[in-house]
Length: 71
Image (cartoon, rainbow, N blue to C red; front, top):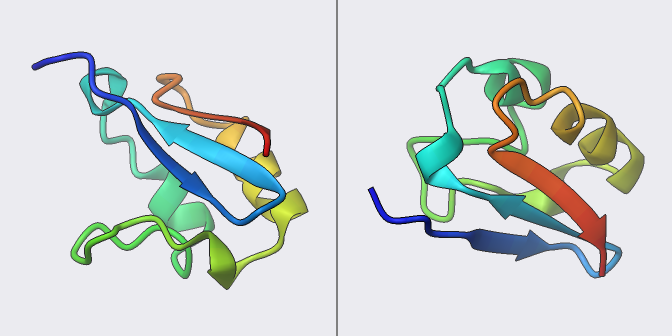
C-alpha cells in the first residue's frame, strides 16, 4: 500500500490518517464513535466532538496511523 496521508480539519486542528500504518485496533472507533465512522465517507467527522477529546483520542492511537497538529 502506498504511503498515503489523508487530512481532516475542524479549523482548530488537523488530524492526519496514514492508512498504511493502521493496525485496525479499533481504539478510535470505540473511544469516539461519533467521530470515527468506518462505514461512511468521509469516515472521520471531527465536527462531532470537541478538539480536546479528539486530541486525547488521537494520542492513544497505538500504531501512529492517526496524528494531529494545530491548524
